[in-house]
Image 1 (cartoon, rainbow, N blue to C red):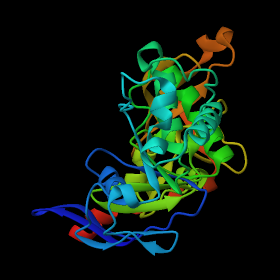
Image 2 (cartoon, rainbow, N blue to C red):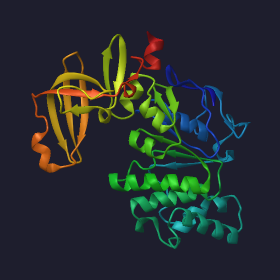
Image 3 (spheres, helix red, strand yellow):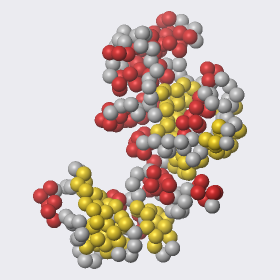
Length: 335
């Protein structure tokens, strides 16, 4: 994609983005509602025409090519299965329209169902399946004709949390097995970090950062990325704005910090027990507020943990405090 732009009247939904996605990559477009990620996906699919810019697929400009002539398929959140058809007929539908003969359709249908862990489900109806199983059928239907790129528009959004987490792992496994390029849209940061090879963070029609998950989390380029991808603390010291993740901050038992740690004093202003961890909010004497977490490893020692109003010493390694710009790309351009 080069200079990709989409305008609706005076509203700029996508503002001239440049993006290259590698063959066989699990690439995620992450951002809040209205950030331009879904509009970008729809332009790749051919459902929306760009106002400007180009889209290339395997080196071929497909900007003006209709959706049915692009080597891409799309999986939606609502599955879009035909309720009157069997699972097998749903999966093989695209092959039938393309004129593939019956025996080849059956072979590829069964292969696709095997890939999504639903062997033997061909004769069932969608109404007989769970939400997770219906999503797998939609995925099988999308990969059965072997597209070069599979586009997924928040496909797990309708599932409950436990099933969604299970499907995240399975989707990544399936993607690795079939070798198709996946372009995934979500607003869920955990989902993006769990599955992706690389992530593009969108904000107001622009891309703030493109990085592998670990780099994105550990080294955000600005406050928007730091705040949107996980929980982050931002404080200002010596004229620099620093972001520090809660799990990188230690509650120190001694009055002096161990060597190698930067330490500051403060007061606990809030304590929240959250099962595996306890979350603390600490107002620092030097200015600013930090959120930090402490593992509840030993419930017997819970009485010794700091309580609200207690003076504490907190510390972190200097390399865990990343310097960030105070604004997003959009705010910088507007100022």
